[in-house]
Image (cartoon, rainbow, N blue to C red; front, side, top):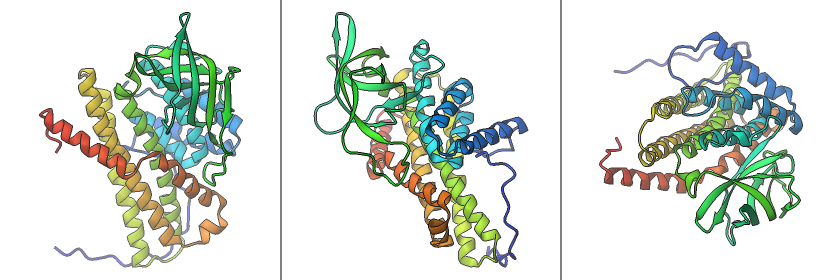
Amino acid sequence: MIVPTPAPNEPHEAHTPTSLGVRLDAGAAPPPAVMAALDASHTAALSCQGDVDRMLELARSLGRTAALPQRGNTLGRWQLLATLGAADLTAARIVEPHLDALAILAEAGCAELHADGRTWGVYAAQGPGPQLLARQNAGTWQLDGEKPWCSLADSLSHALITAQADDGARLFAIDLRDPGVASSGPPWTALGLPRVPSRRLSLTGVRALPVGRPGWYVQRPGFSWGGAGVAAVWQGAATSLARRLLQHCRSRKPDQIALWHLGRADQALWAARSVFQSAAGLADSMDAPMGEASRDAALAAGRVRAAAVGAAETVKAVAAHGMGPEPLAFEQGHAQRVADLELYMRQDHAERSVAAHGAMILAAIGAGTPPW
């Protein structure tokens, strides 16, 4: 059947959405209180006005109230992260690892390591060359070596950090104000996320507290759900770009190409949104043994991240094609969001991530679980 194409609409007066919260569900509108809370978080992120100290205070505040993953409201947690991403990617980049660290501590049964005034980073990147080493000395763990990609280490109070011990890779909690902690490496010169410098840390005899058993950090289901939380931030930023594109289309009479751009943005965001909802439902209903649960979580989170990356890349492209250079040249907020998102999404490993997902599919078939 041929569906007639409606004529382009006359220009509409540009307007701000009635709600700035980002929904990731595909059903009926949530209760007004839910959207009001998301709107408040959006406003709070914007009100920080790029000030790192105020964003750290926002992280502390949200850490007291944000839902934990796998506790019945994983989607609500991801909607909060998406809303922060729509408001300000710098704020989201600061808040997300703090919330992730609190979730990790709760999952490990180590919530007592967090005190209310602390702010947390999560440093698990691996670089070439010697790894950060952990050793026990008179019953106390100490860390020595270097760790790459330690974001905002000079501003945070504490971090969860991975290191290699005699019994395997382990996760530790450290005080970043320890005299054995120092930043090293080249200065942060990025155009994206300029207020969130990621630098190499040099650790010398730094006292550390173990979190979980050897290998636990990457083997638990929560590792995958944390990665999906980062993807929610990307989805939120893409939503903000799509809203700007919608405003552009409503400010003039859109032609067929403009309508195509708008349609592609909508389809990409909604496709990703349904994947988020499905994954959140799985996270909240898991009762499988550790190994099986971790495998299922990794598959679901891989689909979430791929969907969010695809949506963000699509929206970024159609927004650029549809609006041309003007907002990139004359709207500081829009230009910064594009630059921030471009850098932030490089946390995803692109083709390597998809290849790793393919390997998990083959492993699932070997375990007797059909992937589709």
